[in-house]
Image 1 (cartoon, rainbow over the protein chains, first blue to last red):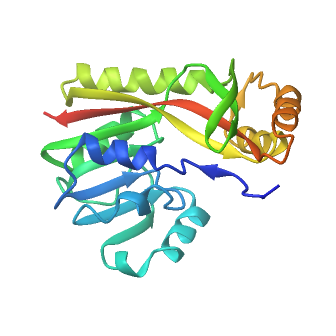
Image 2: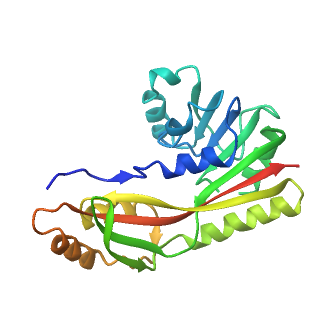
Length: 101
Length: 138
């Protein structure tokens, strides 16, 4: 039997649902709970800019390391808390709470 | 959670959109699949920390009552996880705070082996009910 291991959302249902819900084109997006960037990478080509944050430093480091070349300068990952965001007011057109409430 | 919503509102532009993407308290469906086709399924009483879901719902209600956001729409879908074996599924489930879960791992593995006989590759699929809601900053 072929061993394929755990596959999470292989059909990309979640990123498709997210992109269908709001118009991401030209938007500045803040993703709270970005983790290792698994979801971020699946929709990041659409908006103008994405900042992914998470309190788990190893995950954020993994996300930054896994950033594809085509997303460099377009996606940024930071270790930060949702309750004390390190941004000034009115910076983002979309805030995505990714399993973070 | 309320603090996170307050912060989200602060950094959103006027009329910006908040997307709340999270699981909901509803039964999970576990299936044996062959080539993505379910051939056996069972609903199981396994919830991811229902108290967390209730707290999140409460925080959202607070934000709405304070006039921070206006509800726009909700969309439900199944979030799918595929595993080769029941023990692999158990590892995944246990890492995700499934408390009071009653996932029948032994039965699942038995069904998977039985239905995957004759050279077919039978895998397990776990469908978790998920909700995506959008809110507009007021």
